[in-house]
Amino acid sequence: MVRRGLLVAVVSLLVLSLSAAASAVTLEFQQWWEVELPRGVLREIVDGFTKETGVEIRLLSNPYADTNTQIAAGAATGTMADVVGLDGAWVYDYAKQGAISNLSALMTKGGYDDSQLSDQVRVDGSTYMIPVVNFAYPMYVNLDLLKQAGVTELPKTWSEFKAAAEAVTRKTQAYGWIIPLSTSSPNGIQNQFMSFLWASGGYMLKDGKPNLVGNEKLIKATEFVKSLFDAGVVAPGAYSMTEATMVEEFVNGRVAFMTSSLAHINLIRQNAPNLNFAVMPVPAMDGYDGPRGMVVANWGIGIASNSRYQDEAWKFIEYMMRPEVNARLAEAANAFPGNVLAAPDYSAADPLFRDAYEIFKDSYAINEFTGLPVSEHLMRIFNDYLQLYIEGEIDSAEEMLAFIQAEWEPNFR
Image (cartoon, rainbow, N blue to C red; front, side, top):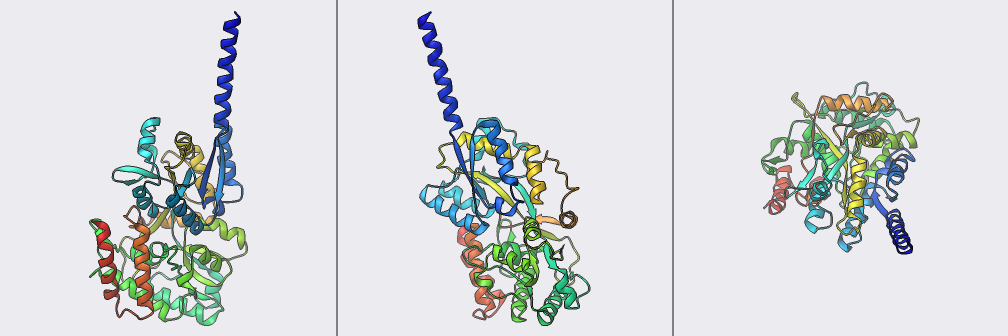
């Protein structure tokens, strides 16, 4: 009896020890989401996971550009946070570096039904990122600035947009348009520059390969953007500007038009509750009346390959993709859910979100950079040559695009 009692005691101690070890696990979650969500929402959501599992979540929250820099540094040094928020443009690079884990393997191991996912970002046939929520990129407009400038209708075409931007710049203390072209975070190419091309039914790729040379719509879009700079309607500092700074300029009433994520509605409402603004479709090329593309981006999620807690990290992702949790996050972020079974209630959403949703339904989602090899590097190349063209150091849009294609093509072999 004594021996049996001793055995029971040992087993009990082992169970307690294992339980204590599990509860001692803390996952670091590095992302920019908390900064852009209403205060306390992400903390509340992840606390639900801790309550269920005992696994603590340490939120590492910074603006988008800073998060990108920190994740890149972690990838280079093998010190990446356990779970990371990802932009689809980063995935190919990190997967090829071996910095992020193969989620297909973890889903198979856990018996996860991936048919409920709206999308997966794959490299060489395996999933490395799951979009948690999806964002459309409409154009934001400061209605008071348009009124001051005497602009009575929202512009629908490039020529109308340029005229409105010129009126704002001439008649108010603000600028007409803003674009972030920082080479450290070159997302202005996909989110702002290419939005004019995609809204006009254009494409930069053909059969998955660069199609820049001789691409008439892209040539016209490039010439149009340069014309905005030449007209002096673009907010100064574009070459060093990040997306966060762009939004700050809009919040402070210093610019009339910007193209940005729906996620920023919350940030604008919080920082400028009296700002009179609306959302609108990105203007299309004059004479174009076909289907219109709308830029989309997402808050993706992945797991660092250096994490010691692969199983716990996957359980956390599984929790974030659970329909009711995913719906809650989509509602709070003014986004569309990443789980097709999620049923978010948008009745209480910001009216501008509902406006954007109507625009989205009349458009097709597009972002040709998502999942490309060295996607951010491709954007940076485009960015560098675009700046040279704007400054007059390259004579024509055709010449600029030829330079870019020559540098892009080796990355697609």
